[in-house]
Picture 1 (cartoon, rainbow, N blue to C red):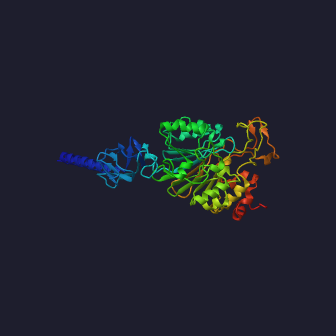
Picture 2 (tube, rainbow, N blue to C red; picture 1 turned 90 degrees about the vertical axis):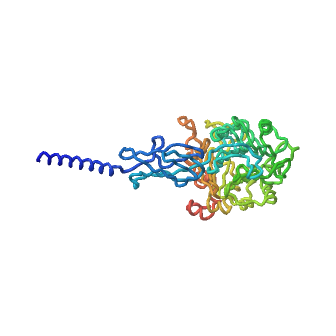
Picture 3 (cartoon, one colour; picture 1 turned 30 degrees about the horizontal axis):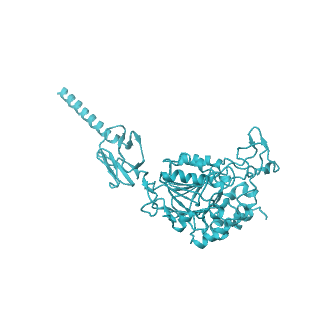
Length: 496
């Protein structure tokens, strides 16, 4: 009898131990995490058409049965085994829940986008038939780059919206190398969707051949027109046989020879060729400053105005011919020359930000180079563009007088302005390749350092500053052109 009781007791203890173990296993599952290819994830960026498999890992390790759910099956579906199929662009949430313990779950955020790809080239005449056929990267911002020029008073502007890329001018021959470096970095498919040439001065066209090295195709080319010559004519002859749609500014403004004054790069992004009344006719060979190609780019609420080296007289003609809107970003014409950038035009366009494209001035006719002992002309950038008269007018423009959003690539290097289609921009610059020097520290004399292989006291760290925040602003006595509130806030000790 005693032996039987002992056996029963042992059996009871074994059963209790089994139940206790099972109970311990039930409460031990504390979490599950969704993984893809063994990596724990919280958010996933995917493309329409993607298929892949998700799994979970449990804490502690165990094999668990999972219920998979998608918050938006029209966009992303997931099977009972974790197989995912991306159907449409958008956002959704995928959740994994333990079947046995429904209070234990994990979720990830899915962002699905259409694949960026070009399916063809359209006419650009309507939003339904834009230059870029396909998905250019519909969620990408527009970026406007003012490439730092090394020679003197040169222009090259690069615009990128996803996989849509535009180049306007290419600086002097020496500058073309730097333009090409940016194109090779940014233009993955080696196709420019538009190439524009403002006028025939060397600081806008001499760098074209170098800049376009490695560019296989150009979808649309618009230039100053006429018979052309040099790099411009060579570019026409090279790319038109490859399928480039070419038009002159004169034809665009007057709707001649199949040209239009508006071209859609995508269904939301277009450029207007504005009628200055000064574009050259086909019998001319060159176009000077007053005949500069003048354009207005629009992406949703963002607008960018660029007029090459347009003069004040041409600006008057432009305002007679066009009903100009207020703009987000304005390129100071002719590198901020006193003979351009009239108060009337600035007040009409009323930009949110102004970009001035000009290097620290060298002497004309002197080949560009790095720092050299004895080459000390204008080290402190006190001379040259932008002109004081233009600066004064720029700071009187209503929006600029309150925002002070003025930038100059002699201090900001290659400047980038970014917008997601808003009537505003974010700005970032880069360390300058050329820059300028603080001569107030050396009795206004450049002091060469053999150790640095450069002049002493080069000004650094101003790449992201507004113009009024830089030393050169004081060197040039531009303080006098600031509105009263800005003088009091930023320069309280200033006396005229």
